[in-house]
Image 1 (cartoon, rainbow, N blue to C red):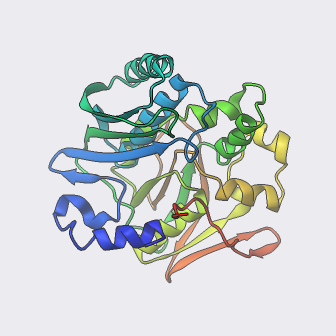
Image 2: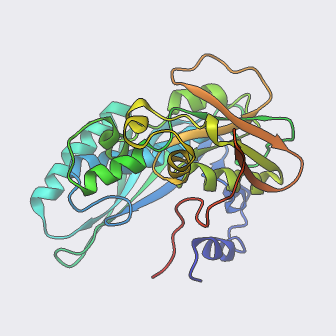
Length: 304
């Protein structure tokens, strides 16, 4: 099982409890509780050179983003932490986690620690628990005729990773990569009216393809409509290649959703980027016509 999708497919045969939602969603839903678990690994999700406080922030934020996609209000977390013999790094991480928990008003309930060989790559895990509203949207449910929207801007974190790798100056792109902001308020306001919703973690196009598959629908994405920040455009421009780079980058942690209803007033920008139609799969176009899909639509874990 070299591919992440193959492993998850095998797990579906045993994850039969209704709360698991067939392992096709971002979180489990059990009564009023919404539960999710995400891991981040050194060298995969963050760089060894990233500040420990930023790693703590990101660990919390990526989990809260899954709750945001369910319209849930976060309550508490449980953490799995690997000690690698660097007391100073651990202390800075704890300080950063304290600040992040306070920023999002989330409690730490407990967790577990393990010891790894000194200098081994760290692997950190977090389980986040929240409460859902009257309706907890899934990835599935998009219907022909729905409009496709995304919050915020796309591609900043991917470009921010390059800034971090090159030890560039701090700025909004680097912040987007190291300290993403889960769209919790927007998710709670959107949950009652969306037909499907998920967060953009692995890349806009790959996550749109996953939502289309879960919904049994065809997603048409207009590449020209994908929102880019001024900082992104200043560095990469906004032609087809630049937009495709943004649309296949990961770590944005914005909300991708479909609806036919009027949108409420949100505390973040929202852009219509396409349409749901009858059929299956994903197609992309821009002002020049059809856009060939790249070999890689976004990030997918594979064994090496």
